[in-house]
Picture (cartoon, rainbow, N blue to C red):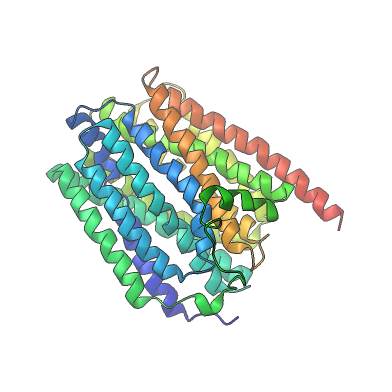
Length: 403
């Protein structure tokens, strides 16, 4: 299979960066929306968990659809659906309306993250080195674009909550149109299943159940690590955003500024450390040390320290997250075959979403019992991920010894 020219990746990545920015415009103003409309404080976690639930249910389905449909068409559909869900969210005046809006948006948003990975891996062919570079690029675009999106959304939120949402919805719709118009069709470069898509295939639960066809003990541990780190990441992320508003009284602009700093740090780490990890180390081992760094940083905020330390740890932690995410994706895609790659990527995203459900939900529910409890949950989740990573190392050694 021949690979596409670099220019096609540049166009796709440019639109991807714009989408990642836009998808984060509403996050810094969500705490303000909850406060202004008199909603329960737990909504900051519950609403996000509702969205992640739909991520979990529909990600394997989107992964399967990537085998049958042009990915750029899937991205257009997802942009339309995501924009519709965010419209409902922006108009919500009750807890029920917020949850329904987030669930509708989540049904489609997961398809974007599955589709972008599938599209990139498909055009990389079997070149493992290029695949690694492109996956790091995706992680960088998501982190930097997301951080700048927070920054922009925070500034827009100073004008009004509605301004941030309206801008987000318009840009997301534009991204779907741009992908359709300017990105090549990936259909000639992937394996199309011989059997047609059936109603059974589009059942989200059957798509999850189909994972048994490619699951191995090693892959199972990788997916458990994905879920565990996702619990910690989203528990920390969702709580931090609300904590700034609730405990420190900081406006959405401050959250945006912190994200801008994260964007700069992410660029530095991914242009130096990430390259070194991918080229000079065994990623089966090195990702464990990145997880160790994340757990160590989270452990630092469990003690009562100054505000600047609390914020500094969050910035450093966010940078390290972008280091291990592409490594995990490389571990998954490295064990895939062309005929099951789309389904495996979909299941990976489902497990990431599964962890996000519990991370965000528990963070929202236990926050009222103690503002630091979600941070404790995040720390314990990364400790569990470290334990699983050690188990993974033993399985890999045993696997190599048996060859």
